[in-house]
Length: 412
Length: 150
Image 1 (tube, rainbow over the protein chains, first blue to last red):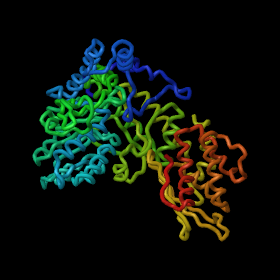
Image 2: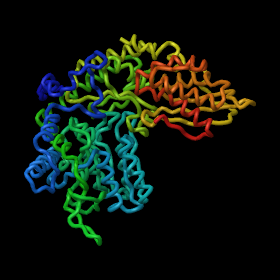
Image 3: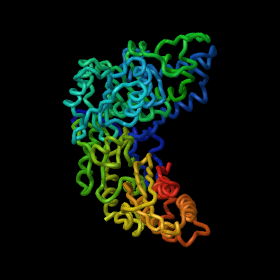
Image 4: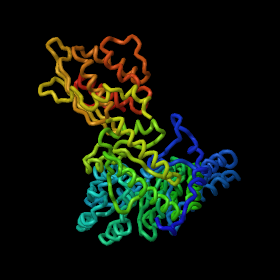
């Protein structure tokens, strides 16, 4: 790590997360499952509880004080999300339940409304199921094609193959992860987008993992769509964001119908609200939006430079410690990677490893990580995965490594 | 550090998980079914052959999964040998209760070897590992197809 890199006061950060003082089976909690869902800082908890205790009503429709204040608080989350992604316009921020819903929105609206049968959607070989299945469903219902750009043995996207898959000009949309939830690999988003645009394709980035670890600038990337979810970013479940370029969102038909998303309704026809409300049918996740705003402000207060430097240091430490354990194989050796380390142990299945680690208070995920095709690409059924957050310490990684040695001895 | 997990990961379970005695496909069989746990990716296939009297004369399995699911499948094969389909379903009901609660009131003698897995109830996320092969077996007895532990 560069000596000049911004630092992060880890003890102060940890004090912000009440759950980290919990013990599991009498052992201090070592929470290494943040890529599945991250813990929540006091600021998020207080914002949501505070809203319920002092300032809550339905939004966008009340003519009373409580509704107006709650609308302000909820809409401030849209400003926060626009700032986080450096969106040029707050109307480009659509609130959804999670990244999965964001991707399904694009598949159902852009996919059915703009893409033509015979056009292709290009994904990568390291996608989460949530960025595979919606495109299969679109293929089967709408007649689009589904292409998959392969992953190299190092766990990086095969750029040459990617470009070849774009070459015939049939790809209308590239839907690709910005950071793999299994391998930790960052995809070279800027380059991928340039290539896609050069071949006439729009690009949706699944930023569920990336936005947690790295500053995202959708304008600098020239991303057409960007999806992320609140609960991995230290915010609540039930709230996520789809960024879309305004002209694209305006051209797209609504997906779900209902209240909030209309301009006028008669039995003959209805007209749609302006973006983003056209895509936000029904009462939104008000409290979750307020919590998301607090989470974004919390991340901003720590700063992405400090977060990225801390996590880079954690990854270096984890790779060094875990590589030194006989029988441990790390899956994915990408040059540019974030805070996720998937591994296998020679003597035990990932589930058994996870069960034993849990006995020492260590929470990891084990299984296919909702990425079965990627698992099969590496000839695996499952891995264990340690993933890091803003509050993860080097000592916790040492605990993981020391415990893994004992797990291996146990299965001797 | 792991003394307390020896109740589940006892010597027999580890041995059967690692070197199952009955993990083989039957060349001749009367019924087969697959089982999978979509949440974790474990998969199992079970083959069954009936004797002239309709009882189970042979069972084999193939499994990709953890030690618990393979050991459970291996012990299951022995427990159901010579049982009728009805007896096997009763045995599964008792086994599932034991896996979920740790208790096995009025257990049939055939349950004895399965008691090695009783403490899986202390690991709620692993109960489905132990019951997955049974789901596949019951699906086979019911005419085949697929089963899931979900």
